Structures are given as structure tokens and as C-alpha cells.
Length: 166
Image 1 (tube, rainbow, N blue to C red):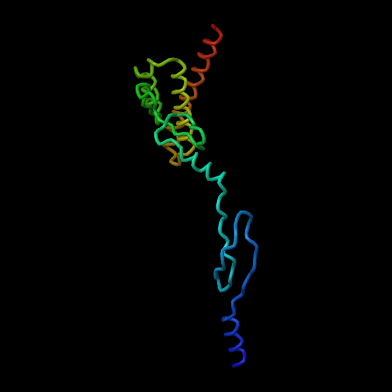
Image 2: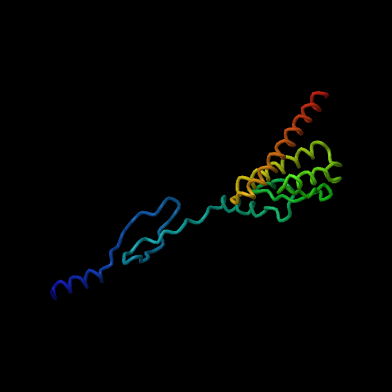
């Protein structure tokens, strides 16, 4: 029994060293101990100068939005460039949509802009309807989505008529 205990303690004291290769793009920086075993400490390799230049360019990401993608940037930042063109939109009920579409601020817009707003209402109503869980809310949103779909189709027909006249 004593012999078994001594062997067990020796086993616990031994550190198993695993010499595994690091992944591509990583390099070995010493060893570290995890779960009683020694593993190579793989650290991401430092970037070359070319990649550092790309990082500097992407720091040119916009702080203030322009709606355009700056050179060297990986993203766009949208802002409202013309706040006077804004129309507040409600889409939770059919009446909300009717009120939105009968506003003076909506009617004063060009047909192209009205189509964009109707499309936005349609998309938001559809997303809200698809994500709704409560049956009452889902039923209400379905009605508003159907109404928005009807108005979108009417807008499409008007666009086709206008294009035919040209």
C-alpha cells in the first residue's frame, strides 16, 4: 500500500510537457502550465509594416457620419444629412400608418422619397410582425403589415405609370 502511495505522489509531482506546434500566424513565447501539464505559450505574431499601414488607414473611420464610405475605412457611418427631410414614422397599427402617410410632411415629399418611406414602413412592420410573440400584438401587427404591403404595391403601380409616361 505504501508503495502505491509513493508512486501516486511521484505521478502528481511529475509535470507532463507537451511540445505541440503553434498555429499558423502564432509563435512560441515560453511555456505555461494548464491542468497540470506544460504547454507552449503561443502568441500571435506581430504584424509587418504593410499591415500596420492598413490599421492606420482604418483609423480614418468617420466620427461623424456622411453616409459615404471613407477611403481605407471598412465601414460607413450613417447620419441624417438633411434633417428637414425627416418624417417621423409609426407602424404599430393600421391607423398609425394612415396617420403617417396623411401627414403634410409626408405628402410634401417627392414620389421617390414617399416610396422610400413606404418601403421603410413595410420593412419595419414585417420585422415587428415576424418577431412578435403575443397573439394579440401579432394580430394587430399583421393587419398593419398587410396595409403597408397594400400601400407599397400601390406605390409600385404609380411608379410604373410615371415611368411609362416618360
